[in-house]
Length: 410
Image (cartoon, rainbow, N blue to C red; front, side, top):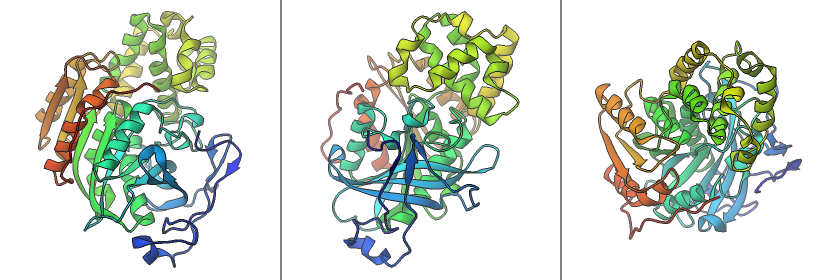
């Protein structure tokens, strides 16, 4: 784990250089006041209370971790910044910024705002607190983007690492955070350019599509394209599908989604939705990260764990769909949607429908790529060369030699 409980992290200058050793573009910002330090207690980042209202993307704090060998020597920062949630409230969000080694190209590093998939809803599951950003597959993907010449920003999303419950699959919260971290990173690093892309997987694929709905949030920067890999969708069908599946591990997504709904709509609580017994099971599960928690679900019956009536399932599902379906409005950038044909978490037929709906709604350019034999995580490695080619087509750097990678677990 990169950050540990009850540790206060080293103060970083707004320029982002090593203490006392600013260089390159960072040297031009060395006279700026120091940002407050980032600190974390019991895995929760500490933020001012009350939080003073600031424009989205305003930095709250930042920490320079120096060169990270896991990411090819890229310089890594942890940041806290302001964003806005679905209720238009100012919220603190945490995340990671990674910049390739060496001098930035003319015009500055283009940015990929990476949107992670499901890791859990507990603060300890925040990718910025994990050396591999939540999974080895994500570390591979981000490393490939850095090697191709992109700086990477990676939001944790609201409530994941910051106070309050993570609003899991609430699209506006996630999409806004994906955009606003680009603004925050440009305050931190003068060497970043104006060009940026949203790229995400699973939950993050949904987040990337929501980010593409509101490209103007990033101010003077230019959103050039979006890649949604196995995007979460059809949220209205999630709870009935999990309940009917009789597959205990699928309950993780249901519990996360119900927690996210309750965090967005205070009229809902887990006890009111599930009853006391099932809610107690859900709360205990929510304290674990997804990679660690499946065993805790193995003994559960999906009917008993989701004791909602058919009518209640439909009503709650409608709310989830309204908050989180990524294909109910056109997107403003060119989009590539990626899907593995053997994906058992996001059904390929759902992603086909997302592509069709985005086109029907008038999105300017929606390209679909399907990879036979690829599962939910495997499609990351299979699609990387097509992803880099798509970014290049929309003004990203010219890709070097590229080969698909075998996705590792973790």
